[in-house]
Length: 457
Image (cartoon, rainbow, N blue to C red; front, side):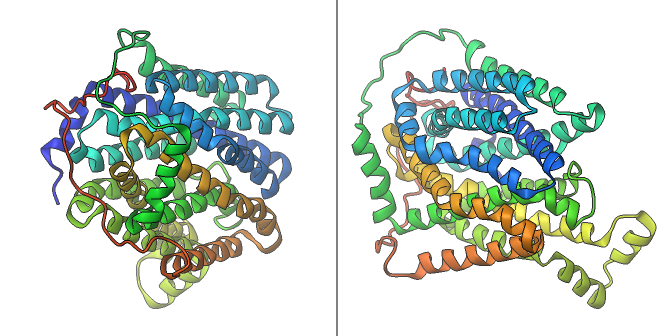
């Protein structure tokens, strides 16, 4: 399953390369800002409840404005949406420099930044099929997820903790975040020529708002593989948000290290994610993207359950296998529970990448080009709506029964919900026709498509 030359050739596409560069900067800034604020509220309150409110402030705009935001993304030039979105988030980071000491202002500004994302996040997703060939979609989505993971590592595991440790507060973090957002806006917008020009599109149909919404739900109701891909992506996304809430308290209570030292979890997860990124494109072409989503989801749930049982997993390994965990504890000073957590984080990162890449490929293949933004917005709105109540409860539950028990209960519940929705005859389409795996190619051999006006030039 070697990477094909067409995948490597994606990086020769200047528009796609510029999209990746801006995405790395933007994701690093976003994750550094959110994680820095998480550290701030946890250290100030010592409770997971305040971090829950922060994640809810980040999630609620998708429920309220996600679908209208997708419609706006389909109507505006994509590059314009991305450029303005990064500029507005830079403004939010700048405002937080002056108002970070008040929890209410933190929640309001995070809500505002997330509201901006309801336009440019669907625009970013819709840009991919607009500027690459259809056969390159698995590799293109893999690279997009790679930049997402790199942004998480740079922002949450490196930038925010490092600056916090060096300077002892959130202000340096927020200053760097603002600079990163400005740089992302510059890369996607002002570095290009003819920014304000308008080029007519040819042979591009247009869907109205309601038609596009119906198209998004039609896909979920008529193609079972697409329904399952979105189902697993929604649940995986909800579990990811839950991990964001629980991670500072998990590192503090279970690993008994500082909340800033999440590198012990993030680094092995990134290694697993890198392996997933390498395998996802060829696996999607060989087995079908919707099958890769299913396999990734099973591995992800197993890994999360393992993290919930990490102490028991550690005891089982030490009692039955000689893997050197005791040596690491005695000689290196690395607690065995940290070692086991690192080992479990690798398949979690690997599986989450498989689900993220392959599910997006399924959506790219199924949604018409003129409705890509709204279809992605429907998916995000559904996911955030479904996850809102669990997110409201998880912080409170973690403070009462403990973070490991909460993680375990949430993971088992997610498996139960996914199993019911997968096999129940009351939900999902009956059509089992797999999504198409090939289609007409854009005329350019260089990886550019014929889309001109609504894609970054």
